[in-house]
Length: 84
Image (cartoon, rainbow, N blue to C red; front, top):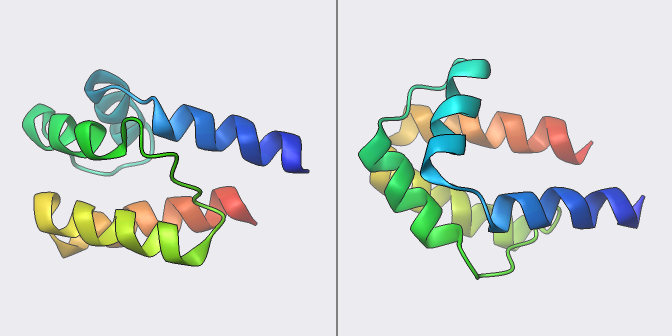
């Protein structure tokens, strides 16, 4: 299980803005390219572990400040699906 967690975290920590927009469309989460750029810059190189509640909360708060609470809520739901 730890192997899959590492793969998911590596993907999140190295995600690009274009990938965020693509995944947003796939999961019905509205994210503009500017918002995706801000989120990707925040995530890049931080070694965030979305399986850790504290790390996930930090990410969701940053997303809420960039994209709004509705988008952050949807992203949090997606993270929870990935971590279960």
